[in-house]
Length: 206
Image 1 (spheres, rainbow, N blue to C red):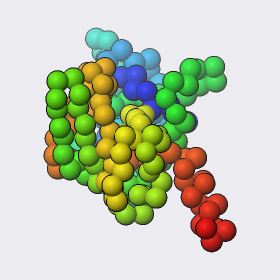
Image 2: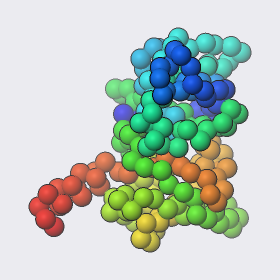
Image 3: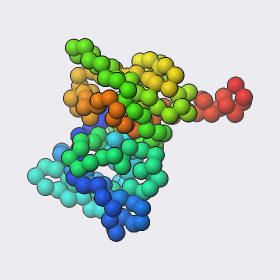
Image 4: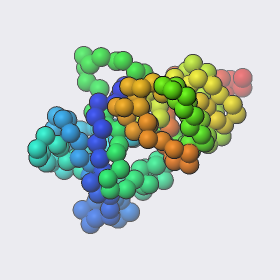
């Protein structure tokens, strides 16, 4: 479980198929400054996707290199396969008992990939419209929560299969969202409460 509050900005060191990862899988390595070294088997969200630490992390000059094995199904359902070496990524270790819940409950189970349709800047006001697969639109409501590349955000508007988010300066500075441009893809996780309510209504024929 995660909160959607990004704790670290990491950088992809490599993303490639390896014999160690297994057939169809890729090994994703991320260098993260200032992060406490996780253990093998720990869960870490990378751009909102819950991944498992696959090998002993390596520390060097205040950075930790963390390796993850990404299975074909994850590559199919997320935007992780579009990452390139040097690309910054949002990193959040799993929530622990007693940690502050400042965002909203995030599972790290990406529901689909969205596409940035527009980025509008007016002073400190930045608004981004994102198009999502049609089946996700019923889970998005104005003033509800959504996770974009692991960042907990409030939906400011919904129009069909598109929704809008507003980025404050801190979010732009401390996450990758400040670097989004039209055409880029992002991982989307809808609010779990919205998903549950929608399923219950569907089951009752409402």
